[in-house]
Length: 205
Image (cartoon, rainbow, N blue to C red; front, side, top):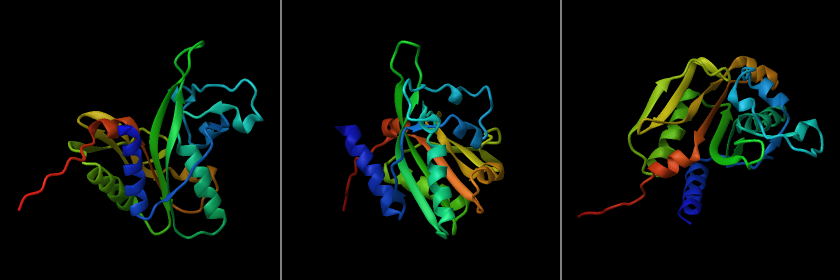
């Protein structure tokens, strides 16, 4: 399908920039939301609860892929890997009601540390956008997201629609994962990217 081909295009673009693809579980611990400093009243805490979980660490379906990516980053940091860049096309699950199936959304989640900074992350996002032929992109300062550093974070919009967030992970969040380095991450809306992609190319002499 067109969407499957688009997903391959995203993977090819990210891998072509030297970023390693990961795959993580969709079920997580509700404590993960505390680790990324989600407010108590955040809508993202409203998760689908698994009726027969293997344990508390896998008892809810994730509403954001950032905790999963940061777990991988923390593991690599503990293994003394100096420079790590990872991404995942992850599925998140948004509850729609007591007796209905949740909305399954895909996000493009990337995280990195080591020989990089905010502008490296922004450059990766911009390169992905260019590779997919996406136009009318804007970045605005994001100071209210508690997962990110208030002075090094941006909100991405495409044709005026919210398309995700990117920036430096808040030092308190990094401490929660025992990561002794500055971490940069992005979570981008897959469908918004797909709806605005245009890979048609023309040639002239």
